[in-house]
Length: 188
Ligand code: S6P
Ligand code: ZN
Image (tube, rainbow, N blue to C red; front, top):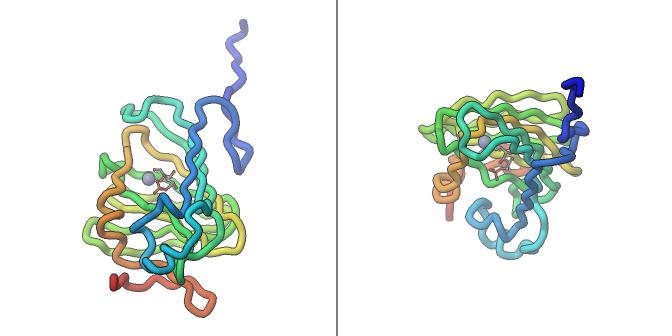
């Protein structure tokens, strides 16, 4: 025994391999109250996959001082004029930050502070994004192929989905004349 170990988990650049990988799939039917256009949401195929998340969770959820590492793959598509997007969340321990980085395809990181001020950053292969604590975050696929990005966050951060599922972000990302634009969300 020479104390040189072979890692049991790998990162191919786009996918995670090996042990302790958690996989989650989110379909249209899992995303009620996320999209603004309720009629378009009701007409969308419920079994269509919107995004998949692979996460390497080397320590127990809630552990102070540990880190989690994940890759999200957002499929291309629209609900009405809104791009396919993730649910979005604040962290349960609200001061916990996170890194995101673009791997493949084109997307947008949509951010909102506690005062409901919303802005967005373009994501593309090689883009790097620091998400400060107390900032809600969600991503949207603005391209025509798969949009994949990486994430690294503290293992005690947790996820608070309730505020977003009840009140949304104050702005939504829609396609206008083939271009993504962030507009005020007016619920009819
Ligand atoms: C976790 C990190 C990502 C998201 C993933 C799906 O803190 O931000 O791994 O979980 O992109 O988004 P959501 O909003 O459905 O968790
Ligand atoms: Zn997060």
